Length: 451
Image 1 (cartoon, one colour):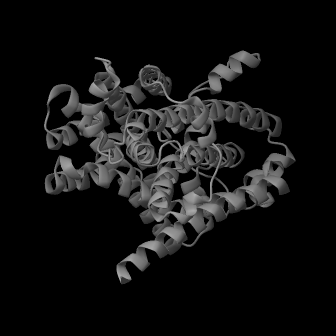
Image 2 (cartoon, helix red, strand yellow; image 1 turned 90 degrees about the horizontal axis):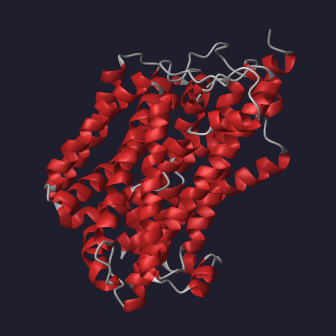
């Protein structure tokens, strides 16, 4: 029997007292084991954070980090760091919502808001997923082109096959997906550790780059890239996904069981996002040390970076390592993007379809625009499209962040797991920063159009 605290926090604040399982085919499918100790529990809870971290090192990040490093040196490292700290905070709120209420963020929105508001939020979430998938699909296609000479348009079509891979792995158990993701993250980290070794960055300017500067806000070109980095780092669909996949663990539904689950899931998320911080910073540092330091301030195309790395670093494998890491990044991101699409569609619309049908629909929403855009613009426009997709993500972010903070601060919904006053203040500060930066970007763009 649940205790009184669980009842107060679990159902009293919701219109529908019993939420349907999120991702029902893998819901509570991973057991902790009887009498598991600290390290065993930590191992069992490790995994969801790495699926979330994938979204913080996808090809969209590459485009913004390459542009930021080549144009402005190490200056925007501070934005990467601040964005990552925001991400750690928001993902913690997301996992708390999932553990405490048994609802993912999409389900919580459908349960709390009117149908028209829920549909509007769903549409915005789908736009964000399409923007994210556009970056991931194009990134994978570029990597296939660089490594094997496959035309980018055909590479976009090939990435649709990840639907079959996700379906196969999920049937084999959710841990298989998590294991593949960790392997690919390790591959990316290893490649960029070597790239940093080859590029010989100036470490004192690197450290200074982590100190925020007002110049970033005053310089509209720098601000555009900074907001792109923010959009590429703190991603709306990750907030929906994390609140769902944390429920794949079979923790006890008591107050103490939930408190323990939140603790271990927070450790998992924080460690994984710290790894993402290293990778994002490494991409920008390599771009700054290799291109900006030698006066190449216009390297934003991933293909240009690939071609220039080997001759400029004098390392034969530099370009190949770059392309391998890009392919691992793109494939990782399309795996998690497919899951996020399923969670958003089911949570907001309560549509129950066969898993393969759901995945074909969600993948089609991303593949079709990517094919059209690639056919129209070809390879030359991919960098601008990648950066623009990340700005779109940033503009959508508030529509996920505000409901998340509202829900997790509501004691009727969260019970003893509701945000503390200090956590609430910090969360709303982050939401305000995101909204103000996006407002500044829109104002600058509007003023540009009036000229």
